[in-house]
Image 1 (cartoon, rainbow, N blue to C red):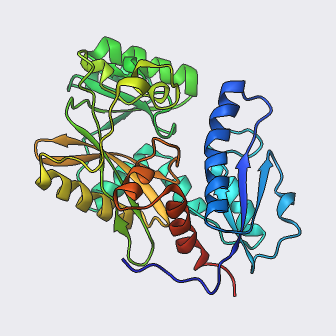
Image 2 (tube, rainbow, N blue to C red; image 1 turned 45 degrees about the vertical axis):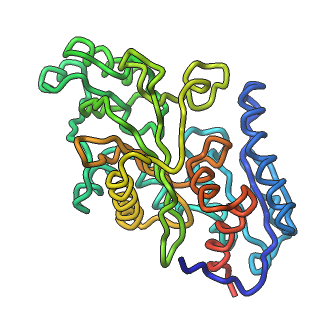
Length: 334
């Protein structure tokens, strides 16, 4: 892989959002990843400054964009959900290069409809879908079990075991639930109870696929529990967090599947025009991986598929951070 070589090692301005309304648990969870980042920057001998913000990036006022690269862990602006594009817009307004996706890329991937349309236009495999604005429309969907998501809730937000529905009545109730809780349309697709993989891709001019991970649900007898919910991703006391296994590289028993997962991940990264690093979630339909979700700026926590893939090729957490900085620093102003 070709890694851009920066003119010289940049200084790093690391930023992360902090909301005074967060619970203690939410704050502790955010701080865990934050401390991992700062320890990595120190271990890699970067000069860095660390800033927590709510609705202002005045912390960057005295920094020169020609010397400082922004490491962007900002996911909210002024506490508004899904406002991470606004953070990036403010960084750009100040003239800084930064790690991760652009505002346009963030906006694009925050709509499940736009994600589906882009995948289909690129000829990439993804499950059929329909969009429902009202519970009365549920009768036109005929494939069960089905998985119901909110159109504009990213990642696993709003997905729990009740998101898997078995018939029109359950589907109508879930559409109503999404409207009541998120004021959003529902997107519905078949629920395929098959093996699930995640694959990270990173880089820019010559992007590289990292070894995939598998999400192994073998501990769960009920197929409604074989969904990687938000609770199971972040709550350490939950059964899912404790019992789901995520081996990497995967799958070892089907090298043909692994090759196809990597190929689809790379093509999707290019189709969406992503940069620096991203993650793709896929489930198998026969021998063909179906893209379920596209994640720019994915988490870099201890469970991260980016970290798992980086470790599989011999990198430490610090080495992973350095590689992403090398990608981003090639965009610094002269």
